Length: 68
Image (cartoon, rainbow, N blue to C red; front, side):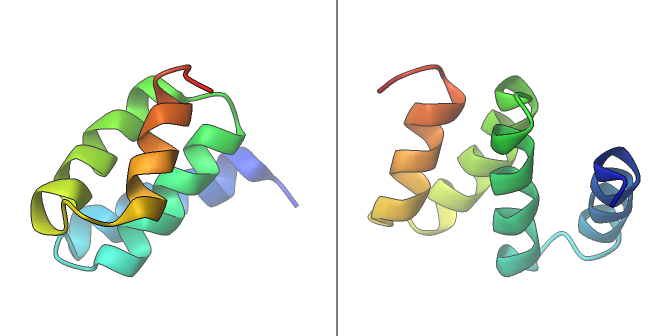
């Protein structure tokens, strides 16, 4: 699978459906996994603004920012 193409597709999907938190979270997870944490931070910030107590989003944000 071409990860770059998948990420581009997910970016376009999130742009079309900005309120789809599941899609945005999936994109953020993939960005972090591919070493693109700085891009994921914006997406995670939006997710955490909607659901600040979400431990999964908090953990992924730490990872995106280079934390343990």
